[in-house]
Image 1 (cartoon, rainbow, N blue to C red):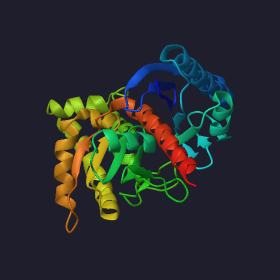
Image 2: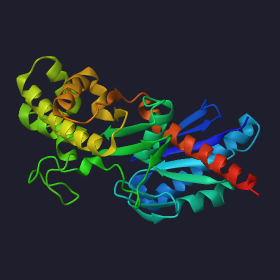
Image 3: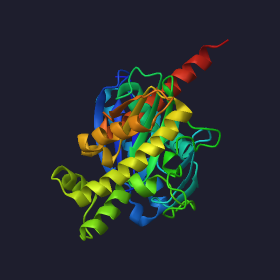
Image 4: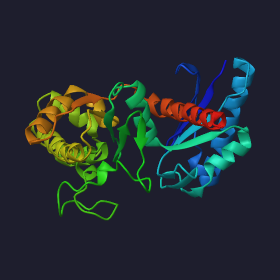
Length: 313
């Protein structure tokens, strides 16, 4: 059966699949990144995992994979196939596409994890059918992906969509990026966790605990949560003013709060817009499979591009 290898590399674990041309998940697997042994060990773990997936396809699906797609965190030069930097993996300037191509003997596409997940959500998830969408992942930080006609825009230097570093509170909390008042310092899952731990007096409390306390009617939790929602709405209105998306897709850990997040957020965005068109605001649909599915889409896109190039006289 014709298929591609899809590999989604996270900070501590890797998710992988063999994916058919219709998007069917023909085989799934997970493996640790081995980051505790250093960046070289992480690269070797990726290469070994990809090789094992390739072998599985030959043994169980009757043929070699046609291509591979890999999504990685941090700064990525997708055009050159280089994993430029990832703080949580410790690597710099890794020619990952070249290494994988050499190991597998296949064409390989490399992508940024959030943009790759956004690609999947836009094409086959919550944004399916939308010609313009913006995907936002609310996790430890906040990042985004700009979707245009079935593709994701990386920008001239690979930084497009970094909504987490829009300043929403000028002069506010210092961000690791060097600015003050960045959105992710107020509306990320880690920011909500930190604020709720301080407000509740429980150092171990996190964003999920805050959401549960909001549901139970705790006024302290409501204040923390509303501050995060207000900051997020400010950032989103800036994004929709610039991008005019048809759909805003919100995923990541904080989005797991469901209506506890989406009901006040839709209200807050609606209250802030003036001339802008209000997009639909939808929860992400693919969960933690988005990155893997997106990596598969990158691989199939690579094959389509290659086929078209070869067919051109």
